[in-house]
Figure (cartoon, rainbow, N blue to C red):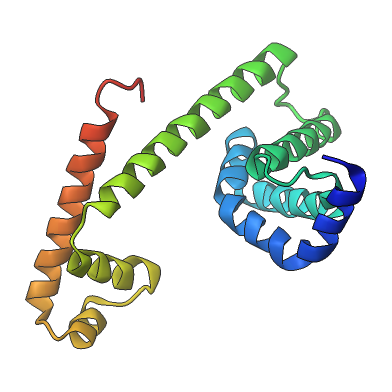
Length: 182
C-alpha cells in the first residue's frame, strides 16, 4: 500500500475508525495483557498505555490488517518494559518462562477466538424471538421483569425462554468444539 493512500486513509477515518477498531478488539488485547500481568490495576494501566501508544502510532497501522494482533504487539512491548522496571521485585521470569507464557497466552487467545466463532454460529441458529430475549438480557442488561414488560410475556415465560436459549447455546457450542483441542 503506498504511503499517500495510507496517509489519506488515516486522515479520512481518524478518531471514529480508531475507536471502532479498539472497541472490536479491546477484550482480546486486554485478555492478552491480563494473562501476562494478572493484577487488575496493573493490567488496566497497561491497557490504557497500550491504547494511548496505539493512537500515537495509528498512522503506522496498515488498513485491513489484523488490528488486534497489531495492538497485542504494542502491548507485548509495553509488558516487557513494565517487567524490566519491576525487575527488582522478588518475582522475576526468565526469558524461557516469558516465552512459555507468551505461547500459552497466544494459545488461549486462539481458543477464545474459536469459542467466540462457535457462539456466533450458534446464535445465528436461534429463532428471532429467542435472540430478542437474549439481546435484552445480555446486551441491554434488562432485568427479567423489564424483558417481560417489553415483550408482553410473564416473567416465568421469560425465565423459561432464557433457560432454553442458554441451554441450546451451551450444547451447540460444545458440539461445534468437539474434536478441537480446546
